[in-house]
Image (cartoon, rainbow, N blue to C red; front, side, top):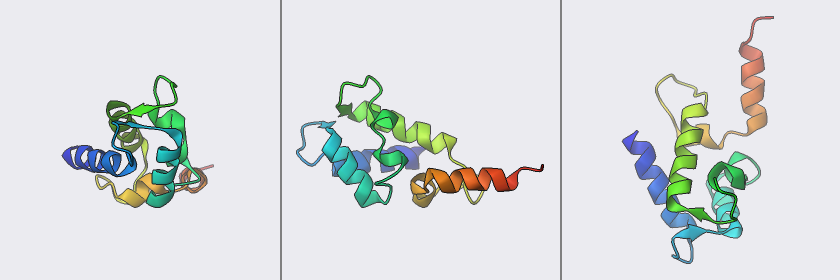
Length: 102
């Protein structure tokens, strides 16, 4: 989990362009787009802004990344890559459907 914490912390510092310690909606969406998830889960403010006050604190951001990291299906059990976090939701749904036995 240390890698996730470190990566989330580094990502927050990159996303917080004005250095005020909170992310506004534009900062989050700009970061999500740059990270490769601009039109999907990383751009969704509800993932990070737990109290829906339109600002994401460092703590909310770190908690959101951890929630996402623990809910993602990975290509390799026990190994989480950044691409797993940015994989579009539609692709995740397709993987789940394909792996079910009907």
